[in-house]
Image (cartoon, rainbow, N blue to C red):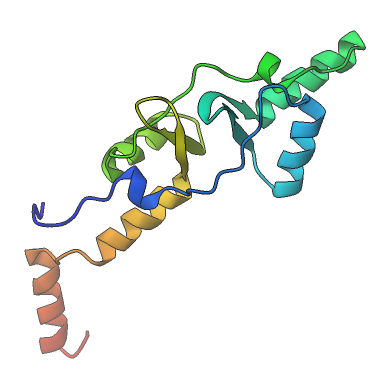
Length: 156
């Protein structure tokens, strides 16, 4: 491993503009916003602090139960997940990759030590950064030999 290369962190690859919902938002209103924006979920934030995550799965459960019980589905706070993965701004790219490998999630909130939302990182953000770093890395001895041999033998 090349120890001289810069390791990117969550702060480098995160999206800083994040669509969020408030805990008092009605489930149906939150679902309309998610569908309109094409998002599978959103952080639930109040006064800048991350309280939970509201996803399509949470919405499905809330609306199906409400339909069955013949009641309104209620608020986001009643159905959001409170136990979820977060990372800090200094979490490195490889740890982020591990989070996505080990957890069945598409996005992870980036929070500071006071749990204030700083941004969000998607699997695609991490994959793009990893691909860029891989492409710009210094070739290993085997790759250099292969390139040299291809030049000597006319690309055969």
